Amino acid sequence: MAKRNNDFLKISDVLKEFVDTNNLQKGLDGVNVAEAWANLMGPGVNNYTTAVKLERDTLYVQLSSSVLREELSYGKEKIIKMLNESIGKDLITKVVLR
Image 1 (cartoon, rainbow, N blue to C red):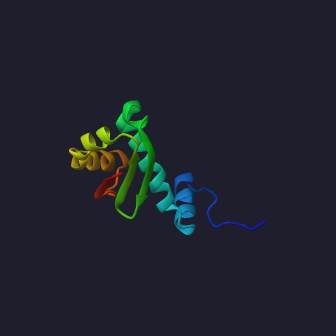
Image 2 (cartoon, one colour):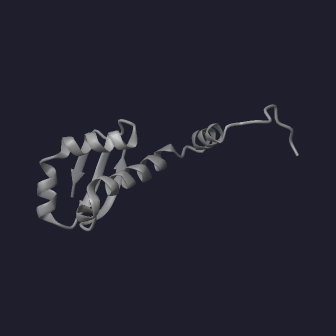
Image 3 (cartoon, rainbow, N blue to C red):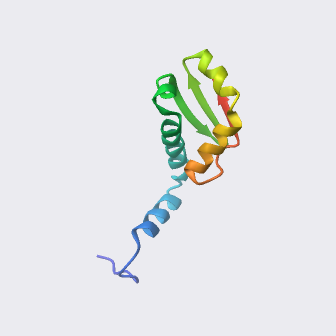
């Protein structure tokens, strides 16, 4: 068994190092964005949401209702602002509703 220099490490530091070492931040951001979408939009919008995907700085949201898609398109800037605040980072700069 290897001996370590530090006997006491914070779990947050260990997890952050693990995420950085294995390049997992992109995937975690995608999961966080999907959760934020579900929490902020509520069950009414989630019933019509079929897919939420983050690619680079663009959020792609697939909706099964064209009426809802049109309504949400008027508030894209507000949606971006709310999602970024919920995540705690400025990840999203554009929303594409499909």
